[in-house]
Figure 1 (tube, helix red, strand yellow):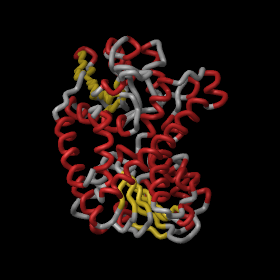
Figure 2 (tube, one colour):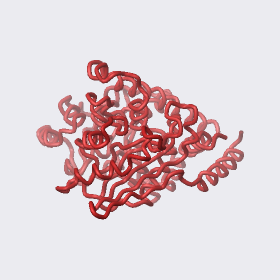
Figure 3 (cartoon, rainbow, N blue to C red):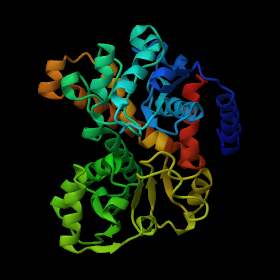
Length: 403
C-alpha cells in the first residue's frame, strides 16, 4: 500500500464510522427524585467471541451540564479507544446531570444506578457498567455496588471489592509513559538521557511523572494551576521528595517543596508547552495545542495524556515540523484495559487483596498492548510518511469495521 492508497482507504473507513449509529441511546429520568442521566453503547460487534460478548464499556461523567449529545460523543470515542487498544469490547459511556458534591447526591446517584439496572451486562444487557470519569468521587464504587447488590458493574474499585484501583495505581499514566518509551526505542534514543515536561499533574499527569521517571526519564518541568503555574527544574536533579509528592498527588507538600528548593517559576501554566524538551506530556485539558500555537512547540515528541489536547489542525502542523505525536486513543487506554481486566479476571478477592493480582494483570496488559500498538502505528507512519494519528486511526477503524 502506498500513501495515496492509504488515504483513500482511510477516507472510506472514516465515512463508514461516521455513518454508524449507537446500538443503545438511553435517557433515564425520574422527575420526582430530580434524577436525569444517559447511557450510550456503540459497536458491540467487535466483542463477539470475547469474554464480554455484546458488551460496551466506558466511564461515568457527572456534571451539572452533561447532555445526551456529550455522552454520545464520548461513547463513540470509547469505541475508537477500545478498538485501538485491541480489546474485544464495544464503546460506552454513561452520564448523570448533577453536582456530585451536593448534599442529596448519594441518594440520587443510587437511584440513577438502579434505573440503569435492566440494561447492565450482568443482567443480560449490553452496558458494561459504571466507572470513573469527570465528577467521580472515591465513595461512588461503594454506593453503586451497594445499590445493585453486586460488584460486577463498577470498574476502578478498590482491591477489597475485587477491583484494580486504577486511578490510585495510575494505570492510565503507566500506558502513556510506556507509549513515550516505545517511541524513543523505535528511534533508537536512550531514555536515560531524555528529559520530559508534564502539563497538568492530576491523576494522569502524576502517574506519568512516576512511571516515566521510573523508566529513566529526567523530569524537566511541570505545570498546574494548583502549583501557581510552571516550575522549571532544567538540568538540575529533581529531589526524590518532589517526585514522590507529585506521584501521590500531595499538592500541599509539593507547593511547600517547590518554594523550599527555589526552582525557576512562572505564573502561567501554558508556558510549559513552549519549553524545549524531548517529550511533552499534555495531561490537562483538551485543545491546548492548536494551529495558532503549534509553531511555538519545541518538544521532539508529544504523547497525549489528556483527551484531545491537540486539535487535528495542530497534528498536521506538528507533523510538518517533525514533531512525533502519539494520539490519546493510542496512548491513554490504560484505564479501559484495567477495566477489562477487572471484568474478566478469574482472581479471587482474597488473592487480589493479598497479591494485587488484578493490578498486576492490568499493568502487564497495559504495557504489552500499548507497546505493540505504538510500535505498529509508528512503523506504518514511517513507512508511508504519514501522520502517526492517521496511522493510529486507520488501525483502530479497521478493527471496528472488521475490514
